[in-house]
Length: 466
View 1 (cartoon, rainbow, N blue to C red):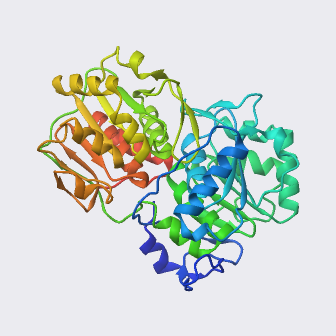
View 2 (cartoon, one colour):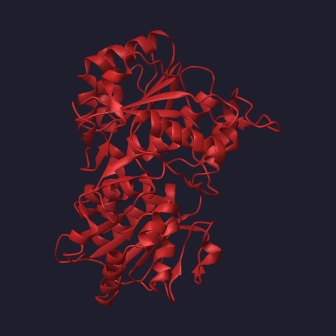
View 3 (cartoon, rainbow, N blue to C red):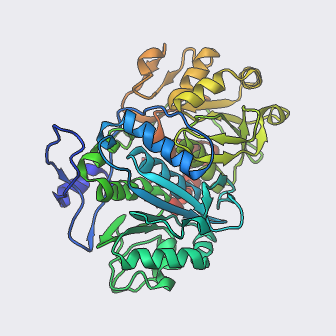
């Protein structure tokens, strides 16, 4: 992923924005009002708000997202929420869908996740089961400010084959409203609909040959009029931030940037190095709860499964359905009591403030973690969930990295300038947008750099050379 500093060094222009704050000032930002110019983004992080959600229908979930963000994020409180449609289908790329929804809701958008299938539950390309807010046929009379198409296969083809979605998107484009597509979606979904005509576009490297060589460009982000395109899971944060700026303006994009964790920190530091390689396919448990961060959950699972790891997602709640921190609903593989019947090579705890609190109260998880440590096996946590390990005494004597909001509460040596720290058989990471580095570091330790680099290439994520 390109750094913000390198991008700004090559291309900056003024971008009009909504004045959400009375003291808002005009700044330079790497985006363009002119059509057909590349617009890459990369951002730092300072902290995440916590969110309380009402249940499950789109009108409730999206309204709750907007209401809470308006409270926690001053950048969006003075504006009527923008309406965004994110369609999903069987085989949609889960990282792209979830990151898009998460970032757009963080900005204050009223996001509707709509299934093009006959049911709300959709199995994504990496096996994560997402639950849409509504079915696509309920969106025919809605007017959206933005339609954002996640990629993945066969997800992009499922979107393409939805006549209802095609009609919605065609009318939307005719009215000169914003739309965007990432990964396989530009070539597989939008091209057959005629929505790429005379547009500079980018997409996943595996699908570039399906795009017109005259109009296709190799950039992480391509903005051309109302259309924005991007390359893959590893560029989704940049893609989402470009859409935020176009929807809400520079000030809102800057505010969201400050709530993410894309930085120039060293990708990984390792101390007390030990071998993690196994003589069998790794078996990894990812316990989750209501309030866990959906991006962290989905990114860890997606990347580990791409590397051929047996990754099991287990709910510590009474139901396999969890409601994540920003309103995304996920169906887990098992309940924690059932998952605890197996032995795992690694246990990884995703973050999210409220989710971490609920994880820490699970007796089954506490017992499992204690047995796991006694067996001298590998474990780790990201963001707020480092607190869960600390309460269990599992960080004693370990050097870690941590989210800035909790680093001073941990009785450990904290490395501030690394996204991921590995100390023996313990791995920790800062938060949201360091999750890809975190998951790839696990893959590298289990299988070696070549496997991690191969996975990163599929994500269109810049894997560190060192």
